[in-house]
Length: 454
Image (cartoon, rainbow, N blue to C red):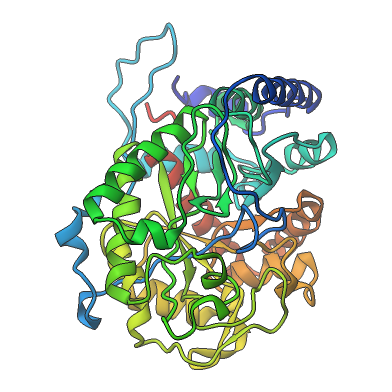
């Protein structure tokens, strides 16, 4: 398919399809999947709580890394292009395109210029839906607000085929601009151990991070490539992993969000750096994007931001060696970095990391040189942000330099999108940040083959 100039001029704002077909298709797929799970062989997996975070199947995070601080060199592990999922060229079924492919920038410009303000804002949101049985009202809310990315949450045990049917139903209702569909980023938390959302026929049982960290990087890269193929077969194109947090051995399981659940690859920056990059490289090999989390690291905290307010890290500074996995991952081409909801007193004592221009703009963007998509940890249900309204959470994150707002609660999306649009009308600087974020997200979609670039 191609974005034609005439369609862009005639259809600057394409009418939305109704949400009813999507709801029917997704729920039918879910019911089918559950039947398949009951009747077919399933992988043996550990159970986990269904609340978002370290204790749940949808915990999130970011990646540290730097040879300068003693870490393993990212370039020695994998070439820079390996971690980013490869772009794929598409041509409309039954059509022949004689025009050469657009450049990446031109492709993004075509989509961006054809979008309405509401559609642009919708691209900033990743909304959570149940991997087992999506809720009709939640689907309608996401559709009405032009949400451009989804996260499969909870526990989906029906296997790859049923999950793919569900995802295809969601993708079929994605927003269109200029007569072309804007493909959706479909993410989930597939780390291993207690944090594995998708299971059942076609999915392997993934061991926890500490076990993965005991393997050679060659073995982990190979296994990760297989896990990524399974996600791709299910229609998932972004994994909210690997965990790049360094939990000191002396803290261990007293570290609530990571160590308690054995999510870390090891207890030193070198081990975490080499294995998080190996994991991401395997996923890129199979064409699935990854997210390094939870920047600037949750390894030194006690409380879990999903269930605890005022979580503080009083150890990590801008020069800490625990940033090594993130730095090396960024140098190796990390496409997404997730920012935590803790406060880092030696970096910015006045703001949660996700609301901190110092953490995002200065440390992540300038000092570490990250050019990809900055995604938040959950801004919908986490106790760490309960003192902020949904509107404040969205605006604060974007104003600090963040790009994609993750919320496992679709019901807060209308307040978020309305607040963003209102602030855009009032503040030209904020509007410029929003536009930059939309372009970064569209660029990631283009790289993942989700945009038609001819």
